[in-house]
Image (cartoon, rainbow, N blue to C red):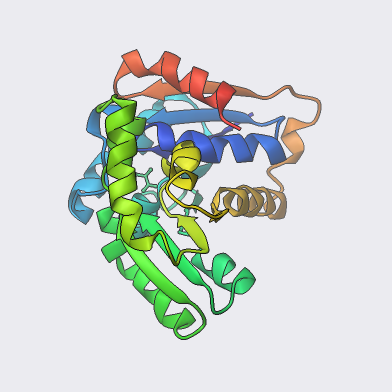
Length: 254
Ligand code: DGL
């Protein structure tokens, strides 16, 4: 039985793995966090390709893979096309900020899209915005302080909360919903909500990625082999000291 491989710059991808397990609990997964090289969000497309092709190779040394899920908006935006070219025999599913979904449900409202610097500047997001022009008030913000906090590189919670409060202050009055355009961000949904006086609607594309992956595997007849199996996760990380934390976060993340 081959694995579904899920990777990210670090812990963020666990928010996607959680959704994959919800829709396909019987599958065998490999999770790879590249915590030693996080954050990815300010790296160039060439750097991202070099890092993530190395990650794919290390995963392929472990097991046969039926699908790679790129649980990273930044990598999807900057390197997914070239990764697919480098590994033509592999299937790749990526993740993009759920802006279309947020606009469809909130026409004319104020939508704040949060992501990494690379995702916010990237062509993929700009294309989505062009397509949605005039249908909602969309603001973009590269929230560069969130990933280091989630990765534990900057651990002081109080300091993090004041960073977030300050960063969100210009959006406090008008924001109706927030698109979590980086897979690390769902871990700090509570802290984000606390920056606003009213209830914010959050959009996270992970649920769609899980459905898309399931549909792809079903269409290709790659779901049959799991009948009766229990499901498992092999945890990997470029910083092996982070593996225990991966397990704990996957267990506690709701
Ligand atoms: N979690 C990734 C994303 O979705 C990368 C974050 C980072 O390492 O900067 O963009």
